Image 1 (spheres, chains in turn green, cyan):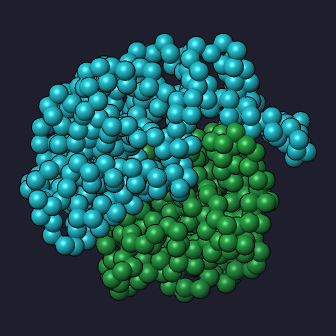
Image 2: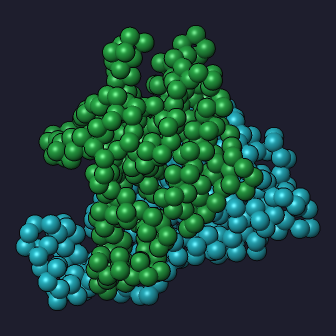
Image 3: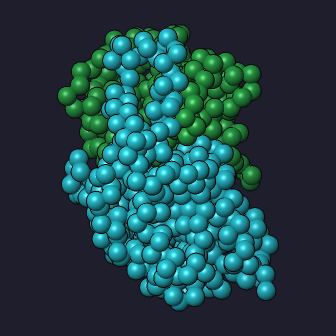
Length: 281
Length: 319
């Protein structure tokens, strides 16, 4: 694994490239799209181990920090969904430059990272594979849910009742920032997330897509209908696959820390060969 | 300038980021930040990155790294026992574990930039590890110990277990104010409220009001929760602080005002530090209203500003 900075001066991104051994190189590379805010911190090690597993099995993997996040340049206060999407494209450019010219590219996304990956794959014809893990289908609903923690934090700090979530959203739209799990939520960031809805429209993506829901042990696959609806919107995809993995919601702040979930890599490592076999590749 | 550096510890390759000031300072002072818990070199809500960049602008070097088995470094902590992984980790930190990689990071930065002065700091478990290493290495001239537990009980206990009188009082006050809201009643009656929090705040808030052993003030939290009160002090940590203070070095402790660990510190550790160190070696900074993890942007900014001022005051980069 190599760690480095890439991109243009003043807007450099931090990246980690997991390269396969030349003898094992399958000629396919993935860019991993991290989730949002605190979920990124909690998920970091699981995605590190996921990337290691894929590279040991012959795939190239690039993990990177969005601009304003992790070790990349920039400030979180200036991040929007648009800048994050732009960073994914830049990461794809970089990965393409590292691999043999014939190599194919895919995106792997977790939670809001999956939302971004799906959005980028709509516009970028280079994306051949899309692996979405527990995608945040409607980011504005996610923000609404997480604002409860913000209200609780304010209430405990001041002993006063904070504004309701609807009042906070209304204020956010007029320029008053909020906060999600300690991460500043600016008006431009919220406004860029608000219109995103993975179920809203038919997709143009023509590659192969896998949607995997991560279901805590002992829980039911309650969002199965939503995941099926998402896959139905990919009517032009070459292949679609719906999967489920029993594992804790490792990105959740309140859950016990999980350094690795081997089932995630297993999902991808079973999915890709099955597609390639189906095509006789 | 920020650059990735590699170093080795116990046969594992570890990674970190070194912030180098663009204008070469007269004195090379490097601030080393120890990761908190099993997390990455970025700190909670990226607070280490922002602090490092601010310090770097002012002429300081700053070195953030990932511990063994964390972030981008090699190693594997998944063998720490399953569901109790956090507890197992904490017990090891409290008992002086996970310091070899901190020592290796310090040695690496000594070899890389030959600093005139080294400061070591961290949040929560990172603070404990920083204190233990600083005590033994006299090249470390100062320590920044933030939001750390003073007892050796399991700090991964829930926030409800650690709720102090002050936090319970504020929580209870907020819940009482919510009684005027229809939305709150709907949540309560539809089983969506946090009943554990309501119960704890009621019990602790009410009993604290009538049976308080020591009055809470604007700067203190009042009494600790009963379970915390029985826990033994982390003597290893106290002795490390004494060692730093007695060797004419300096340290600062920083906490959020609503961090239960502040109140642990005030009751169980601070009186002994004042007695031993006579107040000359250490300073205390409290971030008003903040919780343990400095969970709002303004609290993070205030936290960074407190550390920045302390560093600037005691460790100049100019002769």
